[in-house]
Amino acid sequence: MADEPEDLERQGWQALAADAAAATTFYTDVLDAEVLMLLPGGLVIDDRDDAIDAMGGAPWESFDLQDVRQVELADDVAVVAYGVVASRSGQEYSATVSSTYARRDGEWRLAVHQQTPR
Image (tube, rainbow, N blue to C red; front, side, top):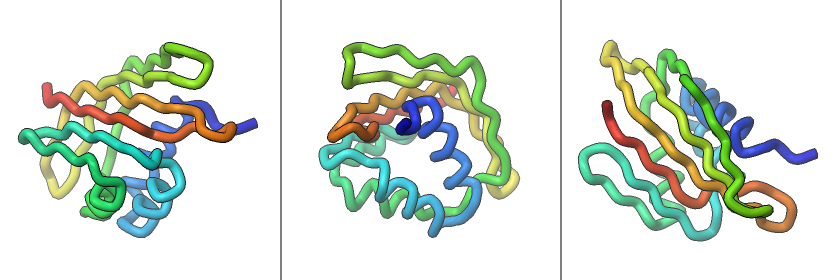
């Protein structure tokens, strides 16, 4: 059975905490053909290749996903929402996150992702 969106979201953070190669490989496999990423600082990414490139930054040193919820909006659409506290380069980051997944040919694909700093 294919991974559920909540599982994929956790795997994404694990890849982002490993290294740039793991992160770009993971998101190359998981991102939908059409993507929309709304990130802190007003950054909007709506090009798949640009989104994959953005995943190749410095890895997170630690992360803690809190109060993870998955809501299925339809048979082939689900939203994963949670809080995250993470650190990188000695800086702590805290945000509320939502990721919308669409099932394509039996596989979940990340289509929309938003992070709101808290």
